[in-house]
Amino acid sequence: MSAAEQVQLSNFSNIFSLDGKVAVVTGGSRGLGLHAASGLLQAGCSKVYITSRKKDACDEAVAALNALPSKRPGAQAISVPADSSRMEDLDRLVAEIGKTTDHVDILFANAGATWGEKFDTHPEKMFSKVMDLNVKSIFYTIQKLAPLLEAKATLEDPSRVIVTASVAGIGIGTVGENATPSYSASKAAAIHLAKNLAVELGPRHILTNAIAPGFFPSKMASGLIELKGGLKQLQEYSPNGRLGKPEDIAGLVVFLSSRASSHLNGAVIATDGGAVLKGRL
Ligand SMILES: NC(=O)c1ccc[n+]([C@@H]2O[C@H](COP(=O)([O-])OP(=O)(O)OC[C@H]3O[C@@H](n4cnc5c(N)ncnc54)[C@H](OP(=O)(O)O)[C@@H]3O)[C@@H](O)[C@H]2O)c1
Image (cartoon, rainbow, N blue to C red; front, side):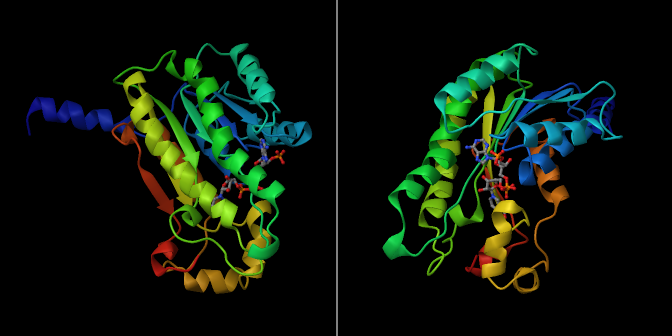
């Protein structure tokens, strides 16, 4: 092996490190967002901003994250409550973040909502709410944070946007009594939005990728898991015999934030044990 190849190999030791990176996690107070925030801090981030609507929930999440024994010394989780579906809240969120950092390296655009109700009575108000939060808010969160995402991004060290979609945006979501047409369509739209932004923002050194989780037990998913026959049945249906765990999200978000994924742009990664390939979600 040549000396040059050996130098390259030795550089791989920090390929997943996020040492000193600054991240923002929307919907970060619980569930997938909190798992990701925990992974980001333990991979070396120096600041992770946690945002969701409820102040108490953000503060509680931040207290738990700041007590993590394995986070980088001096690293901080910071609570900035905001409703991602309100433009004035997004402006305030960006202004608040800008008070304590001059740049952002990673945005996990994860806040989302769902609504289950049969086709015939599916309410217009909830259809709009789901589309607004799961699609429009993602776009405007990214648009408003773009100056901070661009501030220190370079060709060699690009910033990252990770959009939470769903396998319901790849296959068909739930139909029947608890149909989720707006959710499924919104997640397909979120995937396509991520692809558009990959092309739009790539030249500005911001890479955009989407993740498509299958079922992960969480406040949002638990009701639907029960309606679909419960944990055991869904575990047995999945080719790998289980549902998602916190480390599955933490690991994927850390990977998509790291040097290891710096040539991925516009990718959609399903994290579902292969369940979507069997056709029924
Ligand atoms: N769990 C799954 O099986 C699964 C599968 C595929 C995709 N997903 C997606 O993963 C994301 C997170 O879901 P989850 O399962 O972790 O659900 P969750 O535990 O219910 O968490 C949702 C998070 O979003 C926040 N949120 C809700 N509305 C918001 C708004 N308007 N503005 C800002 N924050 C808001 C919530 O906090 P507040 O109530 O304080 O606002 C909470 O932090 C969603 O996009 C969801 O569609 C989940």
